[in-house]
Amino acid sequence: MRIAVASGKGGTGKTTVAVALTLASQEPVVYADCDVEEPNGSIFLRPEITNVEKVLVDVPMIDEAKCKACGDCARFCQFNALVSFNTPPLVFSDLCHSCGGCAIVCPTGAISWKKVPVGEISFGSSDGGRISVVQGKLAVGGSLAPPVIRKVKSYLSDNVFTVVDSPPGTSCPVIESLREADYVLLVTEPTPFGLHDLKLAVETVRELDTLFSVIINRFDEGDSGVEQYCEEEKIHIMVKIPHSRLMAETYSRGGNLFDAIPELREVFRDIPLIIQRGVEAQ
Ligand code: SF4
Ligand code: SF4
Image (tube, rainbow, N blue to C red; front, side, top):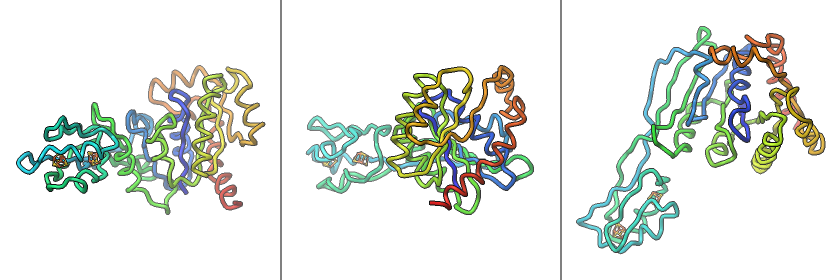
């Protein structure tokens, strides 16, 4: 089973929840860090990294001797990765989605491909091998998160319990990370901002037609807006995590949720079972 942990915005405790779910599991588990702009699950899981692999994508290379500066490729590119002013096109690799279309429309065969690195995948394990970590990381200054996320997902198996730490927000990288998840846990906080972003995240998950529920972090600190919304929308609240000053201190030292609130370990241990029953009941 694959459970993705997502949130409409950063700073809600998404990684705290994903790490807690991983640590509480009593079976072998894979922690897939798809928050590729800021992968920090490893700070808390402390895996021993055994392998690092580059993520490469194809971007166009223009043969100026063959190019007749027609501009067809630049007009075709939906992502503005090619710019031509009646000249051989300039290539903006960071914007290229490697769709291959420009080479198809080029009438002179002037476009070939070169590989450029957009990020890397680290592999490791902790807790005597029970926890496997697959961590995606975007290259410094890089902006193409989806290929890095797709690469992380290419190493995941349907046969092992997997926790996916999704990027925050509701944009393309989030959607890429949520695809193929059996279930999504949306982490939020009980504030007007939290509610606003939760609504966007709920829309996204409903669009993907994936089962989901909500975890409210620091539930005793804010207002009741999130709970009211969940009641109106018939959204299950899986866990309400209380505010704990100790949590902030523990977190800053690389500790986890259970170091601060040990009684939550049992609650998190049972979440996959509850989800499994819900998935099977569908
Ligand atoms: S491969 Fe696709 S995205 Fe990249 S430059 Fe060509 S048309 Fe644009
Ligand atoms: S389509 Fe081909 S020939 Fe035309 S500008 Fe692009 S690379 Fe040059």
